[in-house]
Length: 123
Image (cartoon, rainbow, N blue to C red; front, side, top):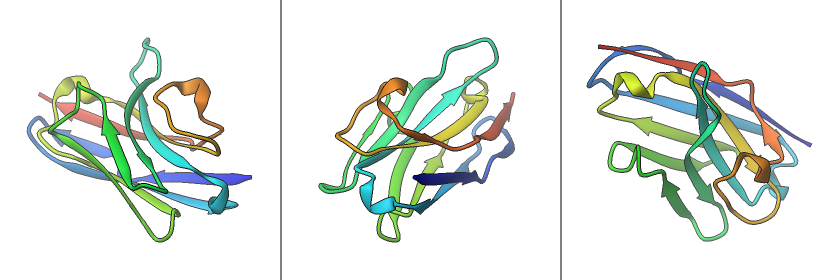
């Protein structure tokens, strides 16, 4: 089992920045990829960004490309999401996720989830 705990959310004005972190514990060596998803009220959970540990590759959704950057350190135990030029439409609860096989952008492909951290961007 892997446990994920997010931190770093908050309230920020449009144009501002936030850095989210996700701390993983447990069998982190079994995790092949980690990702960030977000969910706004009344909407489905959507992919934001992911990182594949063995090749160090990253991928961001088109909606955040050029503004958000995913990174990882500490031997697969921590993943960050640097969010710049935030917009009101980025307001959502952000979730960290991990999977034990492969890489992907679908919610169903991820095995482990954190409780999420709220990001609110005011206009």
